Length: 277
Image 1 (cartoon, rainbow, N blue to C red):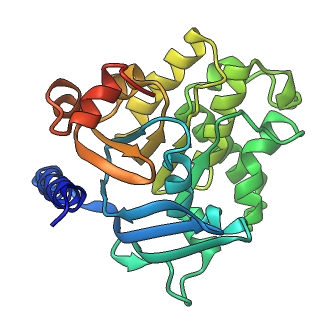
Image 2: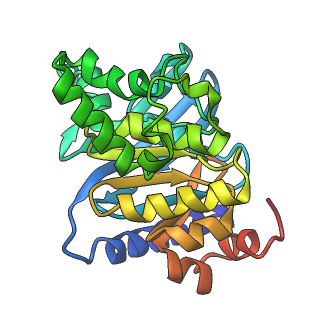
């Protein structure tokens, strides 16, 4: 048996041990991936991913550029399939249902699993219309109900007091940090179950970043959150669990405090101490 084979087997046992520790609480899992593989053409981008994402917690995905972090969370709401050359094997269960089953409607999945992107991307519409867009798509036309949804969503994104007198103004007139919170409010307006965040603060200044981090901590009371971040300090501050990805594989997954204070894999230790990345 080669040294590489032994290392892979040992690593798999470590991940399974970490996985069982992560599942030891009474919380349910919103997502479970089983032997998930993904290719962009001939490029094997995700390799045998087995992860369970708990509800009402913040799960951080960390790792160097190009390690598969963003690809992974885009599989969770099947947005990655918008790339024509993508091939996927394995299973992803959302609330115990395999999202790759032919009868599982992508539109239904994306209603339950919202997404906030790296760069704020408000629509070129008023603040009000940005938030009301999703509910209108789902058939809500009553102005009174829309008003309630808009206010509730903006309050949920901790930006109501800043924009309540500007609802008819174009969202492009807001600062970058405000635009990102508008995008979060737009996500909340369709009442998702899970919020995926792909490096949501990487384009923001430190003050705006702090506001979004505080918001994430508040939102986990009602939502399950998966956040990709290149900022290890951010992951340590706001997440309950952390998965370290490297070259498309999960090297280690455990409670955040444990992973940062006592990593089990030498590669994890090397990454979080800045030896590479």
